[in-house]
Image (cartoon, rainbow, N blue to C red; front, side, top):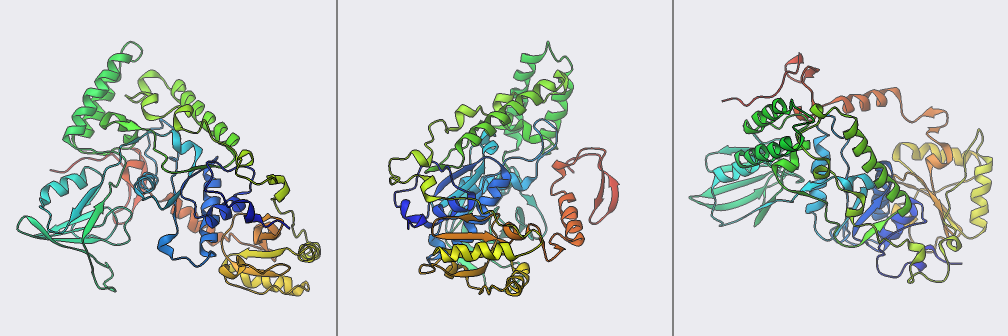
Length: 496
């Protein structure tokens, strides 16, 4: 019998095709692949991340700091040119993924690659380095940090005499910079809850809180840049001067208004994201189809707008063409010369077709058939469902022991069945091992109880309704402020 992983002893491949997401994630996790994984959609990117994190946790016991970090590089939510800002966390996730080191595996949906992004910036502070607090505060605020009295969330900075507290984007804890005269005397990472002793570090890396730098210099650059665009379009859109004045006034006031992301190319040069390291493309044909569909959607949205309603930018400055993202020469895994003689179909990677439609007996019979063939069978369920799943199989005459994820992925399991805790979107059937999720067998219901209870649905809806930035709010909308109650949003202005 061919072991599923025996066919993949070659170095990381440049593309992945013909595998279920969980099976391909197991392959990349086992080979500790780094670089990028490009998938068709955001939903599939989330499935990949869940699978990668699960198989990482069920790995070979290697130190966590040696395993590649798994990060998401998301696309913006919403439609192009809507005049609304996307969720600010999406841009921060892109910044963090681009700034990560080489020991990283980044998962990206295809459409995210078409969004042009500013050049990556960072600032490194070191102990005994010459230090000018005013320059640091200006650098931070131009990149989305907020000056506050007390640092309590990422992206905030506070100044108290010779001490500066800052919570860097992507960091688990804030940092305290203490200076003596015009030098940095110490840098400490501290626990805002006060439960851990501060840790002294030699250097601190600061990343922007948003994609786009807004200060006096970039505001004037944007004003000149938009004037050039306005001259190009003056005959088709005679009322653009009003738009120019409104946008320039807000930028000069330092206001990152709703929809300001459309003007990133005006504030500074933007480029297609650089894909470092090997690029693993899952379902290449679908990825290319998504790239083409996204490019057409951007074009159609722009064409449908009245000339005076279009932002003072050019579509090609904000979005790239599919041919420019660097995926034209991908090689599906099934065509690699490094693959042994057997093809992917010989490995029989299939989607499991087991579903308890009213009774569990047919599922139990299928599981016993796989065990009789010498396959290992692993059921994966989230913690809230483990006890119920185990009890249902026990009542059906099949005892399924609960094991740790590392045991489930271990060797010498031929002909055995086990249940382990984890989060997989779906399972797969290989020649030597069958992975099944609770959803594969029961769907979204276990024992007649809907997993998504009304209370959880309400909680999720409430979270989705929360606004993380005023840049995502349009003037005139009714809001509920956490401190001041119900009101109508009229806009943002800088106080003297």
